[in-house]
Image (cartoon, rainbow over all chains, first blue to last red; front, top):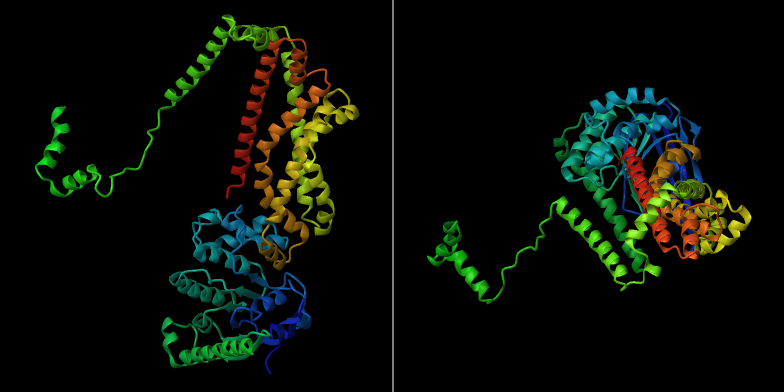
Length: 264
Length: 293
């Protein structure tokens, strides 16, 4: 038995009251994620990925179960994990630099100190020359970079990324994946990554959790053991393709049951 | 000069086939007429300015002539020469500066009090949805109320002096600021708030670092409307009862059939309005530049 996991989601469930009775948005889900792991969640829309993220981030109180970080109960407490939402949510009235330090600023660090810490990182991670520009003059990819650095500079060990590259074009997306892997390698954070893109999930992760709808739940966990650092080529290996096929099967099966239920 | 003009025609006759025949077809109106994008050439600034001054001069001259030839009754309409004479008297021997100062002060104070209080009130609704739900109907009632109808009451309560004029100006500007700022508050992106809270922010931090900067453009967008409203409020306050001010000058001149003085006061009032409007526009630009997006 290895050390206690960094993050433990312990049979967390979420039910909403609707006019037609209770709606189970999330059936009890249990995840155990060790320090420094890169884990992906994939699944159809409505499988409760975002609900789960909101619960982990403390923005939503689950109706069952608890969230443990470093073996301490963190259910319903905010500011414990970095959370990057789908939209970059950069504040248009702040420069890129001042956007990136938002997390540190909220934690009460002095602006000078925060800026001093952020500047070299901006330079190192591809935002050199953009530090003092406003977000409106940045491209989609650059905005996502800034948003991700903001999440990283908020000093938490766990970060949640909710489809960060969903709105980017295919080329930029590939670049961003490489960039993310570099950051992950440098910072050693524990990452939970939500995406619709199966290939992206497998390429980036150590573990892919496949989710299903009605109720939202994790139906299978696929371990990806392809060696790191990974190369683009590795998306052609047998192991990669097998994992991809398995994911497709699971998602298709869920789609079919959903259809059958509708017919019935 | 001649040669270049005749050249194209000659060329087309000689059979620059494609273009020539297409034009001929178009001219004959066979299928499609050749149309070009209509473009208006802009005149230089001095031409525009000259035209504007010419119109002003012509109108004034016409007015003067009509009054002198008794086409226009000078008793009711006065005439430019008389108005100009009154204007010089108003500024040299009259209370021009006292009146201007009085109206200016009530307008500016009313504008500031109304805009600031209104913005603060609008922002305060962010703090509690329950509080907003309770107070909103009253704000909307006050908004739909013709506030100028309250002017006599305000003058009774606040007296003949500056205070009542400031109060009417405030009454007109307050609600506009409140409602516009509240519209800004409601437009704050809930995801933005979620981001702040996920970073462990307090409500005060969200308010100061997200809500206020986000609503500033809303608050600023009302300034120009409000300066006009404040001036209206101040003038109406002076109409009801006052010892000074341009509004009082207009009322007094009208009651004594001093039509030239009515015109003078109206002219000075418009100048004051323009000056304040320009100043506020300048302030607005300055503020918006300070928070460049």
